[in-house]
Amino acid sequence: MKNSWNGFAKKSIEERLELVKAQALTSLEAKKSLEQNENLSLAVADQLSENVVGTFSVPYSVVPEVLVNGQEYTVPYVTEEPSVVAAASFANKIIKRAGGFTAQVHQRQMIGQVALYNVPDEEQARQNILDKKASLLEMANRAYPSIVKRGGGARDLHVEQISGETDFLVVYLHVDTQEAMGANMLNTMLEALKPSLEDFSQGQSLMGILSNYATDSLVTATCRLGFRYLSRQKDEARELAEKMVLASQFAQADPYRAATHNKGIFNGIDALLIATGNDWRAIEAGAHAYASRDGSYRGLSRWTIDLETEELVGEMTLPMPVATKGGSIGLNPRVVLSHDLLGHPSAKELAQIIVSIGLAQNFAALKALVSTGIQHGHMKLQAKSLALLAGATEAEVPKLVESLIAEKTFNLEKAQTLLKHLRS
Ligand code: NDP
Image: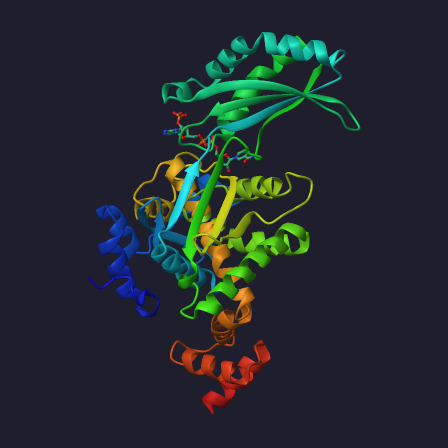
């Protein structure tokens, strides 16, 4: 059967809407919401934030055919950056042909911390707190009983002495937050523990707060591509694979490259986090901390070659404590639509899709960088943005894009001059 997503990018918006409605949406409400381009109302926006004077729009796109653990997803992307969606679509198509992603959630708990200072005997305090572990966990659960009813709750607690300009005794609480990210749950539990922890340590508590360094929520995505998926020409395919491995090694060794390498990964991850109503600042902070876990900032993904099978192997692990409930998730119609598009995955399933998407985005960037160079693919999209900025109408845009590419000069002045010329 002919793949219905073929040529999706070249279809009109109306045709794309029809296809997405038919292929990917499950509920009537979601279909109506997509059709009507339903967005956040001013009244709800006013409830979500403060000093609201309006709402802000960004393009809402889809990346079809994302294959993770044998399941195909139509993935919503919220991004204004040209070429990100095109690169993701291209990468996912190739990776799907090669068998898709395998993803795994290692664990899913959030960590919160209470920092104690002015503790007279840190070792004694540590022992006192650990002796009371069971009652402290009970106390935390009593502070947020609804998560216990949902099958989650405080699971463990450990204590560490952190030395710096001031010595801190830090109590770490590990909580199963089920489908929520759990910031407010953790913060409520930690606040409830503070008086007892001060009592057991004879110190003072500085703060009780969730940590975004979510090392108990690690997720790994991998993909394997036979060289033939990289190019029809055998030698070129092998050379491409080898250069992608070098690019990955470069991002491990040089923080200047690592930052850009990881930015490319977050081009995809952020787009999906925003579309699903997740706190992208929280996930970014955790991932960048994870990228520095051995003291140097490194690329988050690694590409290697399996010589036996002649495959390029991509792998990425990062903290991904995303939510499908809580925050603004049920309140923004676009976010509700995104969860429908994805088939209402659980938080664990969503985390696996997100890490896979990041790896796909990285694949596209590295492949372009080590072959044609990133500007090649960007040129047309950059020219399109410039044409729009210069004031070209819908009918004028394709002609102006063509002229800009022919002239190989990409700035606003050139676009304006060419547009004038086109109109004369
Ligand atoms: P919420 O405070 O919204 O709590 C989760 C909500 O989801 C609860 O009301 C819970 O109901 C409900 N819920 C429904 N079904 C489930 C389920 N199956 N599992 C879990 N909860 C469910 O969100 P979070 O505590 O997750 O906090 C996230 C928000 O906090 C985000 O907006 C984030 O931006 C913000 N934040 C982030 C910080 C950080 O990252 N450092 C710090 C402070 C805030 P019930 O109460 O009945 O259990």
